[in-house]
Length: 153
Image (tube, rainbow, N blue to C red; front, side):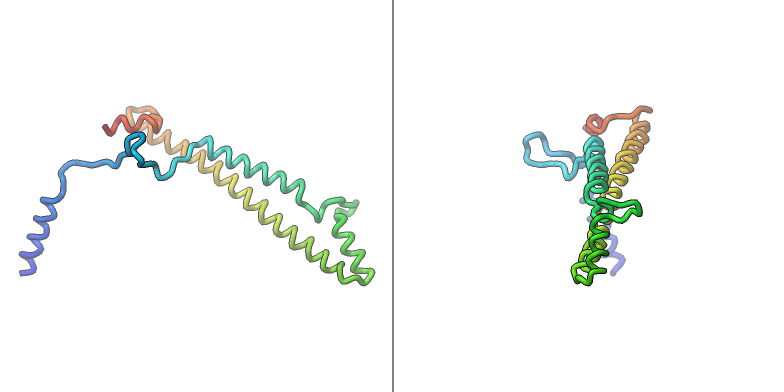
């Protein structure tokens, strides 16, 4: 009896399926629908470039440990912390700790900016390679994404 039920379910499922292929399409212009996500390579490049500029800016302007460095490379904040500590002020160790924590946080932000910049540059390059590879399959030449819809109508 279970076999008969299985055969009935298969037959019902087969009759419900269409034999043609259906492609999802965008809503007509002004129809209220929209794309889930659109990213243009120029946008990726611009964001990656901005992340790189932020990386460079932070390197130049946020380094309090190295600001006002002497011949040995100790910055003015570090030297002040040492001087206050040797004079017995509790502010000395606190300033040293502040400089160390600040430096650690600045390094983390710099690394994040570098990762963003590198990742977006990689993504931009990779998508260009993928587009060229996929495009070469269609009529032996690259086809812009904006023209691909012509092949589905």
